[in-house]
Length: 135
Image 1 (tube, rainbow, N blue to C red):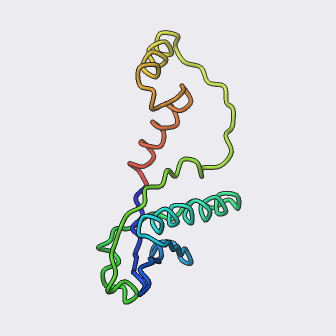
Image 2: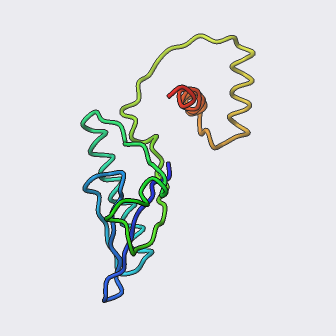
Image 3: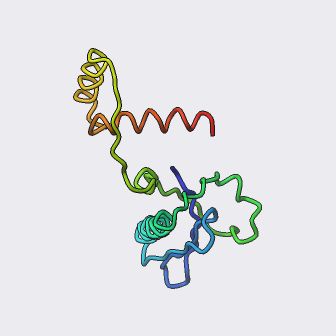
């Protein structure tokens, strides 16, 4: 998910900012690249904490959703990409039954599309996509 971040530059050339969609999520750095990297770390820490306490990450809005925010004037915008799948909680093993021919086709597909990493990754990604359609 892409989270918009708001940055401003201090007189000394350093940068700091916040994530408007995540209350209390601040970051800083000596350079703009350092600040963006720190924003990624801040979001990761926040989402880990929320996940450990049984909460899901907040949905990201767009920059346009924040343009009228009085705290977001005179600075610049950037985006931070966060993989939210690692905050979905512990994995649970389950036992399912599928036709053998279908399972062979799935395994062949996963082997040729390594972005899924495994059969479980394939099923999880398909489930996420389908559930997102109905969210």
